Image: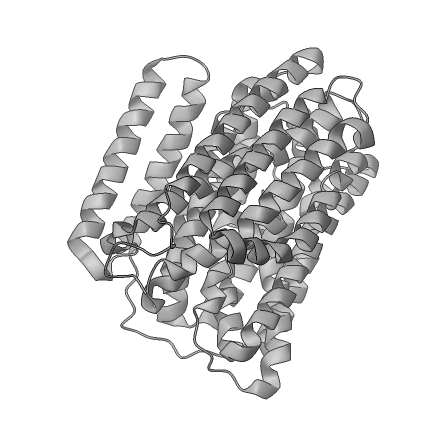
Length: 476
């Protein structure tokens, strides 16, 4: 579920990390960090193209297809922060390499999975590997460059991730048109092998900090709470029954226990409670969850509709979002100019509204849709909207807390984007079980719901403090 728009949620970790690596090795370290981190974006971008083929080959129900997607998203959303803590405790390089190794094995497991349950288990391990790779890879990047060179390094890292997340779906579509979906996952294994070799050779060996706190209990409660929430939302799409009550009870209990635990641990917590004293942090969390929930629905359903509803090739589905990657990469640098002129809240709100308009434009996609006349306009409008939102969102995340908590705030923002994505996928069961005209109808209903989510995101943006300053001790 990742593309260039997701990258902005992660970069604060690198920007908030102090430099410590020798200057002479910084280029090699950038290559190692980029190679490993790109695995996350490759994995997240190919599964949408393969989804229809997986469902057809394994005869999966809509709920089973949803768990194929969310099995990876769940640990990535819940464990990214603890992945960073593990890097502090045992060394970023060591944890980075372990995550890449786990990613390699899980990719092979996905390709060899004989059943739905085996595929879900392998996808869950894939998500754990990604939760270790992303924060440690960004910390390695942040340590490699002094502040005056960090922006350029972050730009190169972003560009490499954008290229990877654009090319991977196209390759996946080409593979699917000529062979099995299993080969799509096997494609990830050699990429992970190359990344492991580069990281082992070039990533600096960081000094472990035995005293670093690893909030295992909070991580477990996060996985249970988000998993139960996903289960509850899936049950909700099928009508109220016993599963809905059980799932809701478990979700509420896990989240309540998490809040109580974090309050008791205070600044030693995975998510320090004082972090949420800032109105900006709360508003940005709602903004991020709503906007990325809508965007994930678009990323998931359009390739699915292209293949199963419009009956175009898997290659067309894989190529569908390349213009989005290009437009976001090209337009995003202009967003700071708008922020300088109008502040951060207005570009965020307008970006969400334009993204919502893109969802409305998607209503023109029908059973006989053509890419350039019917699908591309949606991609273009959504890209413009996201381009306006990414830069101010990333900046506000970093400036709404003090330097000590900047990496935590950025990691939490990334987690919120994936939590929103997980919730969106959980609500798609009624659409994924359809085909033909019924699929198009369900797709249109989903797009209208996405437009509503974007409107909620816009309201959240307008509630951000006008100066972008927090109302807490964390303010700058």
